[in-house]
Image (cartoon, rainbow, N blue to C red; front, side, top):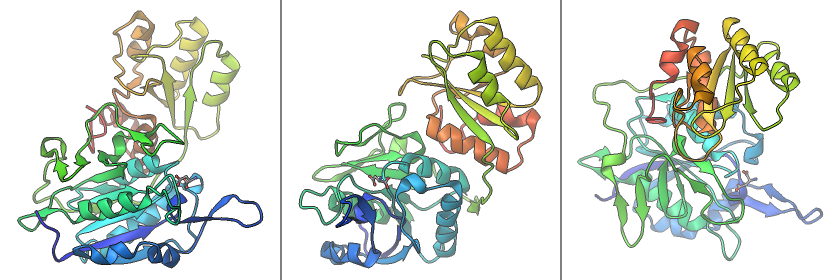
Length: 343
Ligand code: ASP
């Protein structure tokens, strides 16, 4: 495995990695991409050529929306033939959402798309940005017999490459900001880059790369809590135009068994709103019917999110609704792994 002659596209969207302190307010704000590159002369030593594209206005990832995911898709699409791999520099706050969104929007991906960022700006003496960026580029350039080794959307942070749609941001302080509790990491960076090939998505031979550009945002997320009232549930379900509700339940998919709660959910399912059950736990899976407290949910055809993250459930629902998956097929398709996002 070497990276000679690989051509990598670096896509800068914003995030702490390229931020500077505002002199007046001392808040961190995004700055110019060329300044960022000046801070990493090491990039010239890498064994691959690097081209760069930047969002016109780099953003804090709290401002990322599905429209921005589609802008990234369009950049990748324009450079798909000319480049061997893609590295997306992105704020860490919503990086798992974007990684999940991109995994659905980029179908039959045969090249690496690696998202990375940092907890400290690149100009900071103790920055984690350099290692994250340099290793992400090296991973994007990894190849064997002319073919890319990673053929999926990954997220690289603090020595580990994860499947992007399996990740969650768990820490706003530590350099190890992400985890993937339901799926092992794909690569570990030590003295060598250790690739765990058995965990990578398999090759999609003969399948054409397809980009999708429609996300339907008519969804909502409700985390249930002890004391939740009917007003709250009905308020959510009565949102005009709502097509799917992601219900964050307890443990392995359990929820209150009060009649008002179950009746409300049932009446909305009958109206055609998809109720998707994901767990509030960071790890583990929804198993409908495992406890009595999820039996009725199973009977009323609530969709099982299995071991999907909330981040991936949101983008999967938007992607499926945007692609026009019909009501009759919605449950079956959602419960099927499309990009390795669930078991
Ligand atoms: N607020 C920043 C962002 O998500 C945090 C970061 O980049 O780590 O854009």
